[in-house]
Image (cartoon, protein in one colour):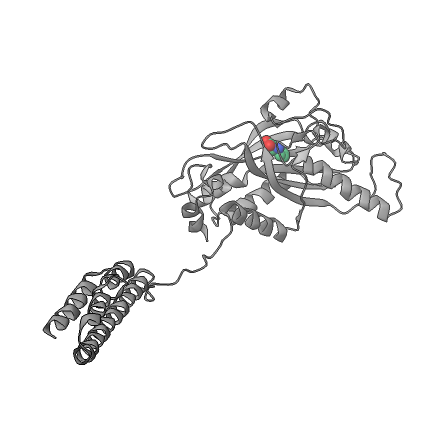
Length: 357
Ligand code: PHE
C-alpha cells in the first residue's frame, strides 16, 4: 500500500516538473504507458493468490486513478499557463489614444494662388489655364521673340523637335504664352458672336476688354535655394482701348498691398527689357518694417504689351493697347511666410507643410 502511495507521489512530482505538454506526455508514459510502472504492477498480480489479487488489484486501480487525476490537473495547469501567456502577448492597451486621421491642408503655394485669384477676381480678372507642354510659337515667337533672339537663352528648357503653332515641343518657361492663347480665343469668340469673319485680319471693332490672370507651373534649367527647375508663375493681362502703364501701377500696387495686408508697402517699377513688352519694368517691393525692411525684393516682370504681340493676338494695335505682368507665386509665398529656401516647397516634408494648415 505504502509503495503505491509513493508511486502516485512520484508521478505527481514528475508531472509537476514537466513544463510543456510534450514533456508531460513523456512522463505519463513512464507511469501509465505499456512499459510504465502501473502496467508493470498489473503484470505482477498474475503470480498472486486469488484473494490477494483482488485486494492488490483494487489498490493498483486506485493508484492508477490517482496518477490520472494528477496528470489531468497538470495538463489543465499547462494549458492555462499557455493561454495566459498568449493573452499577455496579445494584450491591447485600451487606454492608449486612438490613431486619428490627420487633417489635410492646402500647400502654401496653393494658398498663395487662391489668394491671387481672389484678389484679382475682385478686380474683375478671369482665371485661365493653359498647357505646360507648349509650342515654340506660343512660348517665344508669338511673344515677339524670334528663333535667333538672345532673350531665348535666358529661358533654357527641355525641347523636342518641331514646334509649330499646333505642335508642342518644349516645357513652357513662363506663363506668357497664355497672353496669346487667351487673347486669340477671346477675339475669336467675340468675332464669331458678332458676325465678324475670322479671316486672319486684325480686329479693330468694338470688343469687351481682355482682363485675365493665368497661374500655373513653368520650367527652366535652374536649381538652387531660390530657383527650382519647376516653379510657378502667374500671368496678368489687361487689354482694352486706353489701358496704360498708369493702370498697371495702380492694379499691381493695389494687389501687393492687399496680398501682404500692408497698406504701406512701397513699390518700384525698375526699367527693364522683355521682347513682348515696351516699355518694360521689373517690379520690386519694399516692406516698411519687419525683418525684410529696407530691401528691394523683385516680385514680377511687367510692361505695356508690344504692338507685335497685340497683332499676334489678332488685334489692331492702333486701337487696342494694354499691360501685362508675370509674377512668381513661390517668391510671394516665401516673403509672406518668411520661408528662406524654395526647395522646402517641393520636398513634401509633412513637418514643414503642416505648419500651413
Ligand atoms: N514672362 C516674363 C518672365 O518670365 C515676365 C513678364 C510677363 C514680363 C509679362 C512682362 C510681361 O520673366
